[in-house]
Length: 106
Image 1 (spheres, one colour):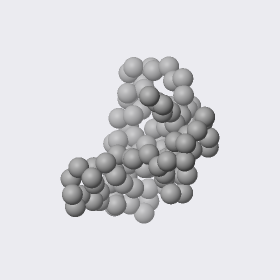
Image 2 (cartoon, helix red, strand yellow):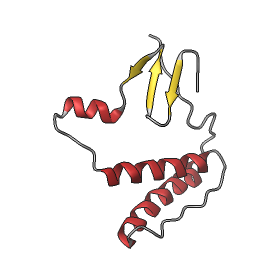
Image 3 (cartoon, helix red, strand yellow):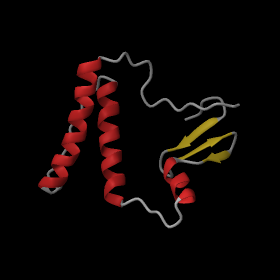
Image 4 (cartoon, helix red, strand yellow):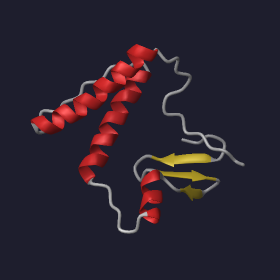
């Protein structure tokens, strides 16, 4: 993906602006809190919830199979997605873009 000098490599999850890597939230946290490491379960849950809510915002449906998850984990994920649905139902936001990478050259 290229947006006027901004590229994103989804496999490595690396953004670049004019060929230079841009720090991401997890990387910044590691720099600020030495030794900090996000738990892989939370990273996975965050990616799952984020992807589902982005699809909902784009007006698309999805089929999410959580059968391999424990009941506790399944409820945690479903609860976050339900919160996203409630937000959209209550506030009825008008989306201009969903998952559009942007940056400031300033």
